[in-house]
Structure formats: structure tokens, C-alpha cells
Image 1: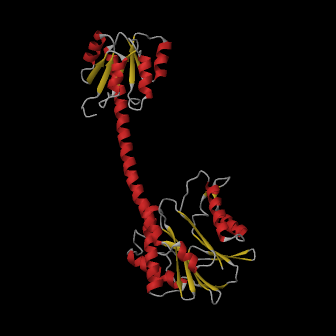
Image 2: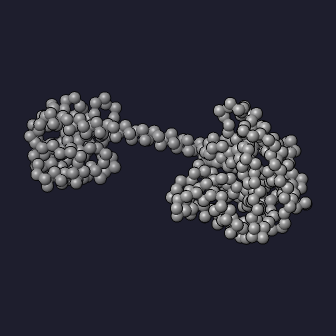
Image 3: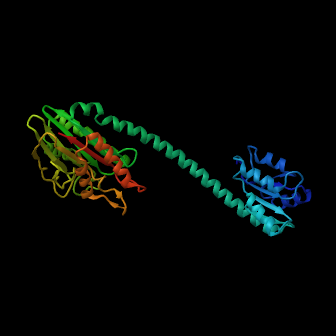
Length: 391
């Protein structure tokens, strides 16, 4: 509507009634129709009215029929209709509401009541229209944001190691990554450095767009540390990564920005049959002969923290057939199951232990399906990353 005042369509076969209504409602823009066909033509037009006052008894189509047609048509279904009629029995009033009317005014008109009812219904209509405009605006903004984030997802995915590269350098493995939102604060990374295979599982502060920004930083830093600077020992990689994060984000003890990441890194030496492991909050699990060994990470974040000691570098001999698992806290922290509780570390580790004998592809399917079933109707609370490798 471009008019300053709302438009009301007055429909009555009596010229006297139309004159009374027009005079009583002279503060509004009024248009008139003397029968149902003319009323519907106006209601279906480009400049449709904001409210319709509709007589019941008219030649041709009666008011009930006109109301039903208008309410069934996409162009006019949202126009509020008030019946004006001399029939004030309960059955007629009920029939009017069943046809789709929002109010019922009986003849002869009480002008003050008429004005009050019209004003109320127009106020409701204007508020509803304003809400709809805001909703349409929100949908437009949301679509633009979603489109941008979905494009950011493509960029983020392109920064991760490709499936072809991973299949070429790694033994049998799987990677389960389930972002909470479109983009993820969890990321994985891998590189071959001489006889060593370096694999990283990381959980950046936050999720969604903030977490994704940190993950892109993490990938770039790892390329620099491992590829450019030639640092291959997991503990030294994390030490250097922490130094860069603190420096780049200008963190100190009084800093408000203490974002960083939790991480686990393994360096697999296929010649020596050794695994080097270091972690910041994220452990490594090794399964051998139906037994699980937990290699605990240091409780120091990859950011400014209360403790800033060097990270511990574990050296673990491995046997052919051993399975190792790196993971972030998203899977164990998910609410669900029959009691709507977190899976917790114990439940998560039991799941790995019970299924480690399957192929890595089968494990991927089992764990992905388990997570979806466990979560059920609950919202996913965090990004999820699990990496499994059979040595």
C-alpha cells in the first residue's frame, strides 16, 4: 500500500448503508461495491483493500459465499473481513465466522462501535503486515548470510587435505567431521615429512564463523611450522603453534582475547614403528588386542594460559593392526540417548573399543549413525571430529 491512510472496501447493495458507512469512516480511504462480483474484482486487484466490510444478504452471491471465495484465494486470503448484517441470531453469526470473517457488526449501526471495531481490526492488520515485512526482510538477510557462509564452507573445505592426498599418504583410516553449523571450528590436517606421517586433530575456540576463522589460521600456521620451518616433533609443533597464536592475537595475561585451540598431533614413523604424540587437552587412544590405552594430553591450551610449560612428547611403539584415534570433545559432549544425557568420555571410548575390529569405512558409518541416533531430536551442541587410523 502506498496510501497514507488504510483502504476499506464497503460492500452493500443499499446505497443508504454505503453512504452511512462512508461518512462514518471518512478518515480512511473507502471504495464501494454493491455486489459480490464487483467486491471480488476489487479484492483481487493490484491495489487491494486493507479491510472489507461485507453485507450478508445481497443479490447474486451472498456475503458468506463471497467471504469463502476471498479466503480461499491466495491474493485475498489475508484481507480481514467484517460482516455487516441485520441477522444477529447465533446461527448466522457462527456461519459468518466459519466462512472466515474476523468480526460481526449488526444493523442498524452504532457508529461509535463501528469505528472502534474497524480501528481495532485495522491496527491488527497493520501490525501483522509490519511483522510480515520484517519477516521477509529477515529471510532475505538470512539467505544472504547463509549463502555467504555456504561459500565460506567451500573455501574451508578446500583448505583441508583432499581425500586423494590422504588416501595416498595414510594407511587405512576414516575421518568423521560433523560441523555444528555450516562451517566448523574443528579441523584436521596431515603431511608427509620424510619417514613420518603427521596427523592433526584440532578444536578451535567457538564454532560456526568464529571457529572457522581460527581453523583457517591453524591450517596456515601448521603449513608454516611443519612445511616451511621443518618442525616434525608433535610437542615442538604445538609449542611453536602456541607461540604464534599468542603473538598473532596479541595475547597476554590481561588480554580479553584468549581464543586458541585444543589439539592432538601424532607423527607416525613407519620405519621405526613408532608413534610420537603430543596434545593440548585432546588425548590419543590406542587399541590393541581388545585393550585400550589412553595417552593423555597436557592440560594447557594452545593460547595464553595459566601454565605455559613445554608440551609432553610421548613416544609409543606400535604393532601392525593397532588402531589409534584422535578426536575433539564434540562427540562425547553430545546430549541424547534414552536419558537425554551426555555420552561422556567413557561411553565414547566404549563405542570405539566395541567396534575397532571393523574396517575403517565400516567404523565411519557405525559412528556417524550412532551419533545421529544418540542425538535424536536434540540440537548438536558442538562440532564433531573423530579420526581413526589402522597401523
